[in-house]
Length: 277
Image (cartoon, rainbow, N blue to C red; front, side, top):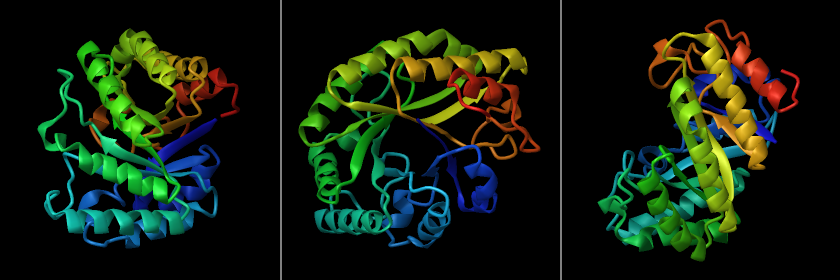
């Protein structure tokens, strides 16, 4: 199993430490569309070169996302296709062979966000990635919501016909909430796998909102058991240390504490996976 974390370039100086605890990485912001659509690959190339000293298991995030769009209009097909070609050529040259190609396209009510009503944009992105032998995933969150599940399944059926490889699951919850909805998520995963698609867990943040540490330990254990039962091969934490949290740092969601020491939730997570932490 690949257990990884997302990193920014400021984290690269910690790679020796990180490689002792993780065997995969995701690029958190270095390959977002607002950069790559400008031809800005320097920070990504630097990160990949450093990470490759430890592992080749690197995930790209993300290509199509309504919260971070290319600098040009998506209706400009010439620029759009040129961007895709340059992005996947860069990925191919740097052994970056796994991408979350489309993020959060389905709203909670199960409907496709209006910006993606032109499906050809998505299909073309998948087609271009396949040309470069890059595996593509649709990525979404809050999948415990029934209406959203149905919308995602409908989208996945369409994208699979055009060569999509799988679904990548975001788990951004308070520990308490995750414990309540984990079984619903597990059932949803099984429905996707029944379609013949792979499922990865590509973003994990489990906030400890109450400050009661045993709850967070239980949530991490539940995550491990969910992954094992579903035969999931990849889990990526969206950060590693409570020193650097993308949202609600006061709730300290990550596996390592403010001093980069392993928390009990991390120890128990690895124990549940039968890995020595």
